[in-house]
Image (cartoon, rainbow, N blue to C red; front, side, top):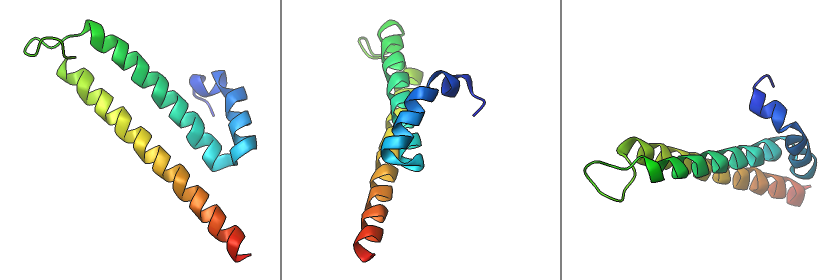
Length: 93
């Protein structure tokens, strides 16, 4: 883990991994990071308005928002799948 943001959030990551397991814990921190990015992009969208559509963020801000929302959705689905697999293993044991 060389990335500075991961070093900053090391305590948070360890807490998630302890509570949820390594994979789900890392995905949970990923959700937090994506949420923080979404908030920042949203704030930027307030100041970076579209020239063609008054009151709407610029196209690049809207695209970035859509990409982050898609990444969050995939992360939620991955976490749910890991949970389903864990439950299936415990039920078959």
